[in-house]
Image: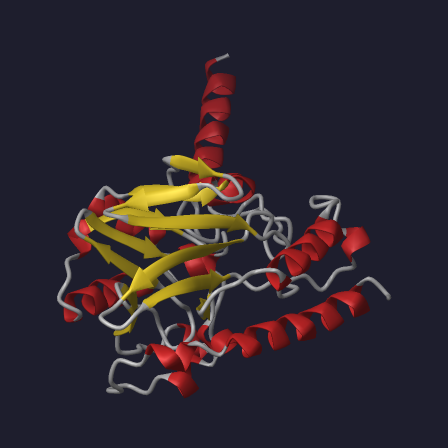
Length: 287
């Protein structure tokens, strides 16, 4: 009997250890994901603190700051240094957000949350994935976590408002890429004018499988269609995205460039990108 109990205990212990295992997928084919990029002011109180492609954004307010996305696990140190370079303190971070629950955007989230005590808020449909480190992601095998699980402090739904220090961010539910992919719409201003800003999570198709072959996400085709329709109706002055390549970061801002919000005001490029994604979606569903 003691031997059986011991075997059960060892088995449970093994399962517990396995459940805590985190194995971040290789990003060797994407060196730009970890390539440092000098932080800079995009517009008003919105700053870029990400890598050459994995976009991370800092919104500074008198009551503390908001950090959106954290890149890979290795981005932790870089984000800290970028925020310090801009003259701000990581410890002033009060709210943590993400545009999607993938390892290349949540990799350092748990570490930054632990060091700052900031509240992590996430779209309801990505909550489980964020909490289990990606194990329940519809496009993964679920054997290990691909990023460290993050404790959730607030569940967000479409058009919920995140408020801090006079800033009000509207979360927009834009599913498809992940079940809870989302964008953020808000207003900032500088000495010249006000700007309506969109941080967009574009509905790129991440899975190679047919939509009909994904039982873990039975409404994926409908979600992509909804997001494409929703995004085509958005109105804003300036936009950025989850990946630098999506909004031509490296072309629009060179290290050392002066403050220039106009560089990110190519609204037509956003709608052209959506047209391209619509074509990809139509091919995927066999239209």
